[in-house]
Image (cartoon, rainbow, N blue to C red; front, side, top):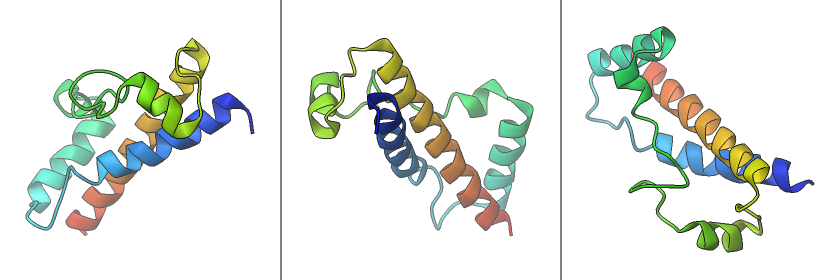
Length: 104
């Protein structure tokens, strides 16, 4: 497995975990429907829900800590981009899956 595909997989797993924090048993169908519609429309308010996995308050661990945890060179721009892409894909897949379950 290449560093880039390994980075995508690690980012995806972390993204799914972060996405699971958005909706819970107290979330309303209206809130979930607003998230789905906002995502489909590219509404900046909804799109801004996605945390940045490698910086800011949502990162949780520093880049060196993440690099060590996943045995990745996140100082490499391509590897870091794949991690972030995986995170985004995992995050939104989980958020939308959860939202659809609430609306159903």
